[in-house]
Every structure is written in structure tokens, then in C-alpha cells.
Amino acid sequence: MTTAGAPFAQIVVGVDGSEASIEALRQAQRLAVPLGAKVLANAYWDYPQVYSGYMMMGIEGFEERAGQILDETIRTAFGDETPSNVISNLVRGHPRESLIEASRNAGMIVVGRRGHGGFGGLLLGSVSSALVAHAHCPVLVVHTPEQRPEAS
Image (tube, rainbow, N blue to C red; front, side, top):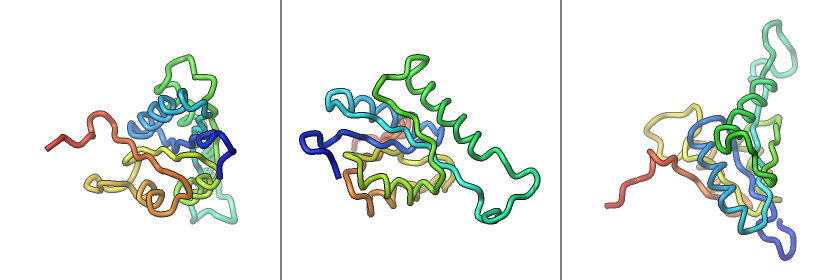
């Protein structure tokens, strides 16, 4: 769902600190400027499922580390001057489900082709594949410059 007259009022970017998510953030910013859109840089975190419902000693810092990764990613993408239309957002939840939900109110979702985790041979990561199949808005899957397929 978008605001009338502003189809791309908000571009949501999934950020995990990977080179692909850094490039996704840069590309989202490049698209946002001429569209007059905000860029919502979302980093997702949650407690591992084995710890749901109870806390154990030594199991802490997930939210803090995700916040550090978010800050580092934005700094890597833009240097010390974060563009005024980029908003950082730390979200508790799994990236796949949370980004699909965020797509309900976004003009576009931008993600890297593959983030942290997964298997090297996959063409798309599990999050980007799920978004392409289930998002409620357009999805842009970004390759890092070294990963762009060569023209045949």
C-alpha cells in the first residue's frame, strides 16, 4: 500500500552487513533521490529459537550486535554523512517474514542477492527468493559489483 501521488514514498532495504546488503542500500538510495522517497534500512534480529521463552546465562547481546551491524553497514555505504532520507531501523523478527510484512506498506523492497549464511551455489538467498515470490510490492534483488553476471 502506498500513499496517493507518491508510489515510492518508502523503500525498505534488508541490511545484514554483507557486501550484497551494502550495495542494496546504495542502490536504494540512488533510486530514492529522484523519487523523493525515504529509505528505511532495516536490520533484523531475534533470539535463536532454542532460547525462546527463557533466558540462559551468556545468551545476550543479539539486539546490540544487530544495531552495530546496522550502523556499520550504513557507514560503509555512505561514509560519515548519512543521507537525510535514510532512516535506520532495528527490528526484532526473522528477515523473511518481517520483510514480507514490511512490503505491505512499501513502494519497493531492496535486498542483496545473498547475505550472510546460506550456500555459495545458490543464485538467490532464501530471503530474496521468498520476497520475489511473496512480497506485496516490487522487489529489487541487487548483485554486488563482483557478482554481476557477465553478458553472454
